[in-house]
Image (cartoon, rainbow, N blue to C red; front, side, top):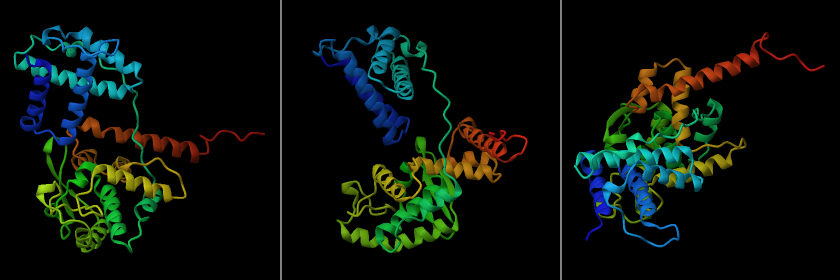
Length: 319
């Protein structure tokens, strides 16, 4: 008899991929979470394997036990919350398909997450980072264009590596982005980003010749904007590595990742007086509440400035 749970997991992943139009990144996360849940259910306390339980035997207690096992393995609250959200979506799908009577994960409380303000960089710090690549080399030109676009347009790293040549208009200073849920948006970028991209595009053909020519057959279409030194489409991990490398070259040691540049983009716009709803559109946030976290960053900065600069706010000097 086929493993019913395993087959339903496959059906669910196909559903979110083809009917919900989820990104491959999202599908991979769902698959990883459900694989972990499946392993929990099919591994006995002594480490031996056991058959997957019938679907109607998976209840809210089972889900809580799974979350407890995650905590025992020192998973962060944010990771546990994500896995619970995955189970809720999966079991909602099962209930909708009539495979179970109700969604047992719906009544399991999500862990209370700490409110964490996004990291961002000062104007001087981000300028030092963006201008650090050696633009005398082809890869340096590429890296400069990447950093300019991450900060200049506030792109997610997955959006950046997914760009094709037809998505960028240098004459208009616009880039078409496919964001979460495969939703498209148009984002402007500034003169410096435009100049960096134009310079890189002249060098891009050298990267194509350096490796094998990209083709649709090997998963690296010829229209990909950002290429590796092998001539293939650059990956999100590669962008993370190059950001780490340039941060390491800075005199001021900072904790920066590609998403920090997106946070910095939004924070600097808000600080300069940009409308919150405009920032929401630029970032591609579905909900304004997601964008509102940047108001807390701005207020926090204002409080620090006040406490540092206002004479009635300063602490008395120690005698």
